[in-house]
Length: 504
Image (cartoon, rainbow, N blue to C red):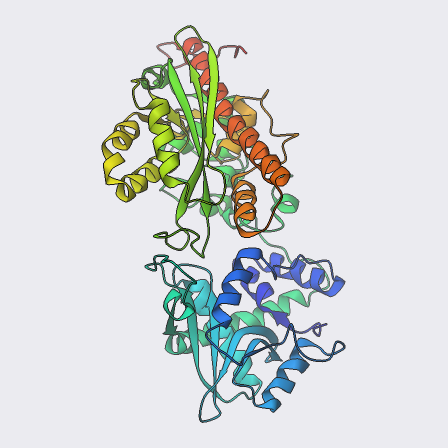
């Protein structure tokens, strides 16, 4: 248990966005109720591969007396003269850090190596390096430098075991960490003062509240027309509007520069109902029906599974396809490639067979499927003409909703999971074992990485089919609602709008 006047890395990181989040995380740690992020399956696999670069290294999680702390084990391993220590823990200077690898140099000095599962160097990693530098200096560790060990995004899987010397890249962050150190120490001292307060600090709510473990506590009670729920769009800062006293979307005056998406949200707030752009009927013409409705599921792994694949590359393994014909009849087919083989070729060929010879538009949600088809075209040049014809038929329902419709219950979010319950309220993911794309990816990955029975494989594939089918059915229902709205929206010369009743 860390002392009350010490902040760990996670509290510092969360405090960069919001001191209230740091205050709450600090208390959760003291109570033992904070969710641990250690042991994440993908990060642990990357960690295990990275450790192979240091033969003879020792892990504080796996060695030392059972009643000793990780910090005590770190000191014991230092005294034993081991060449490298994995997950070395230090507490000093008002903070605590866990160093992924502490590497002993020939001169006895140490290099702290941070393992990054993020694919790009960003401020998060630089400040993590700076805080590590601060703590190790305060702990009187003879430090030679701070390095970053990262997955090489250019790596392509070859037959046989992955060589960790090739899979990872390494770079020095010593200078960047030193430059960031003054501001990191200043922020650390400020956060220590904040978390020591007996009562929650007063923090203005704003756009930073959307990416926090405590969003449900802080933001969910706010009204749907709270200014912070404005959809993202270039223009004036929403936080500035809130600071100026515009607490509700409808409060933002006409004199303020505002983009079309926010203007539609403001209209919805002032009218108290769904706001529909009169241009929606014209925009809908490209969507049919008749039409197909398409959704992909993909495997995403930092450690590539299949030959030729790269880290974090999206490998499609399943498609779901609904079709509505000219008479309104609905049919569904799908394809899921069983785990084991590289699914990409079979995925592509089966999709071409299913839709390649037709002319109807293919409705998707976002440009995700378009990018996957382009990647498949690059991998399989012989299939590229057919895949590109399919790609050319894609029409994006997300773009249509974002540019023509706003309901306050969207809460500024245009994802299918956000707009679906509003525009297709009869559709639900309740009762499904898989309810989101991340769970779908992990379910399929588990069939590749582990020895599972045929019954377990069949059950997982069944759950994946049901989830993906629900996704494309959601596209059908949202499209139907938009057509109902378009057929019933009328405007007067004065700009008044008559709103239709949405039919099932």
